Length: 301
Figure (cartoon, rainbow, N blue to C red):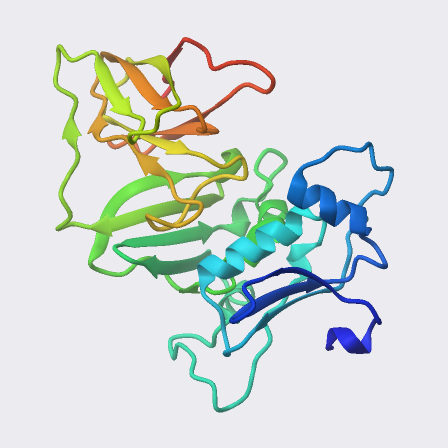
C-alpha cells in the first residue's frame, strides 16, 4: 500500500534526489526528535522510545535496486527502530527483467518451503558471498531460527545456491555470533594473487592503509595454520565485496604458526576478524567499550 493511503505526513529519511528514497512514518511510532538524533548522534535523554514502527518504504526510479543500496538503507532503518524482518520486496510487472534462476526477491521464500539447508549467494566484483542456514540444527544453544528470523531480510536479493565457479577459494568463513547452524563465507577466484606469509624474524606488520591516526597491538598465534587478519571499521559488522561501505580491509600478510607481530592499525577499527586458513575457524576481537585496545592478544583459533 502506498504511503499516501495510510497517513498524511511522510518523512523522507534518506534520498539521493535522483534514484531512490527511503520513506517512513514518524508521526505514529517515531518522533522527529528521534530522526534528528539518529543523524546528528545527539543524546538529549529523549523519553520517546521506538516501538517497532511498521510504515516504511523504499522507492526506486527503476524496478529493483542494488543489494548494497538495499543493505545500506535497511540497516539505517533498523537503527531507527523499524522492524526490517517484516520488510518485503514488491514484484513490479510482467515487463520487468529478473534473474531467471529464481524470481527476484523470492529465493528466501522458496527455500524456506523446501527441505534441506537454505543456501544463497551473491556475486560482487571479484568476490562471491554465500550463506547456508540449516534450520534442523536448532537447539537451546544454537538458535538458528531466531537468528534467521532477524537477519533474512539481508539476503532477499541473493540467488539460490552456493557460490559457483570460478569463486572456489575461501577467503573467509564464520558462524555469525557463534550460531553453528549458520555458515557465512566469502570466496574469491583461484586465479587471484595469494597472500604471502609474514617472514620471520619480522616482528611488525603495517595494517593502517596509510591512515594518519593509528594504534598498535601485539598479536600472538600459537596454533597450527596461517591466520588471515581482517579489520572492520563499523560497529554493525562487516561483510560484502571489496570496496563496499561495509567491507573488511585485509592486512597484507598471513601470520604463521608460533609467530608474534606488532600490528599497526587504524584507530577507527571497531574489531578484528581472525581466520585460520587450515582449520577454517574464526574469531573476532572487538575494541572494549569505554576502554582502550589491549596492548597484546593471543589468538584462540
